[in-house]
Amino acid sequence: MRRIVTIILMMRVCAAFGQPEAGTSTQTPAVDELVKTAQVHAAMAQRARSAEEAQQRLALALESYEKALDAGAGSPLVLNPMAQLYLLSGNTERAISLFHRSLAEDPQRLATYSGLNDAFFTLGRLDSSVHYVETARQIAPDNAGVRVQLGFLYLQAGARATARTQLDTALLLDAGNPQAHKLLALWLTQGQQIDSALVVYRKVVELDPRDVEAHNNVAFLLAGKAQYAEALEWYKTTKTLSSDPQLLHALNLNMEGIRAIMAGKMRARYILVSSQATCQEVADKIEAGEDFGELAARFSIAPNANEGGDLGFFGPGDMVSTVEEAVLGLAVGEVSPIISIGQHFMLLQRLN
Image (cartoon, rainbow, N blue to C red; front, side, top):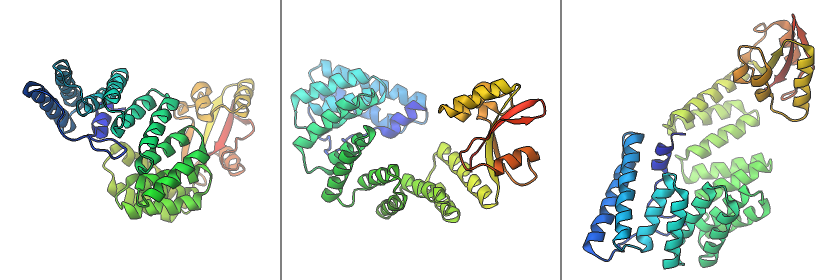
């Protein structure tokens, strides 16, 4: 999704573990000039006005780095930024090759382990990511950033106890680390400890009052607790902090939904088919765990099938009585029995 824009937003000149990549590393003026040219193109890519311009600048930066490499540059201070550009432009295998070369030059540099973590995580090779970050932990056991990254990786792996240990250690090392607090809040949310998660997310907001993610998550969790008025205020604040059009659209939808709930409206989705046998087939698939919305897209003959059968929000009298009464009789998430409506058959699922 908008890959080049994402690349530019992700570009960095230092590693996630907090070890800056600074200084010079080349052997000759000619190599120095090639590296400086690459750095200029990379910086201009960050300021590019379009994805096409950013891609062109990234290509020019990589071309200059490759020439510098051919001319004798080979220290981590050249290899790591070059590898990051390859990683962020999609050539993960080339990035890994360069990071390994950097590691051979200096096996103590945390930035290299951070880059290898990023590369293998991009490939979905979680075990390899964990391996390199665990190695970084052995090199720098008191580095909170390393512990935070391990907490994230172990959360991804489903190793919740190990993740919690790493996050607790990170906060002992750096009590004001916002990312550690955010991951702890996620850990609590996954464990359905919603009140505790809210306390931690509010701590993140205290540490960084402009953290969009924390504001949004507070709003989401409050809405889940049916504290709609407060959730609405947090969503409003989130809107003032964000300029991302996709997030703003999602926020507007969430706020619209909360206002509808506060006004007493219901929301449901349905699957409409032409025979009872087909309806029973779909009902059996839902019972077996298949997704209602996906089944609506596959089987429903209703005009909103591609939207998962979503009826949106409606109040008393907005729907035919058969539908309204059926939805009122359902718990949230529950699916109705087969409903005969005219010459068709329907399944309903209540969403709020």
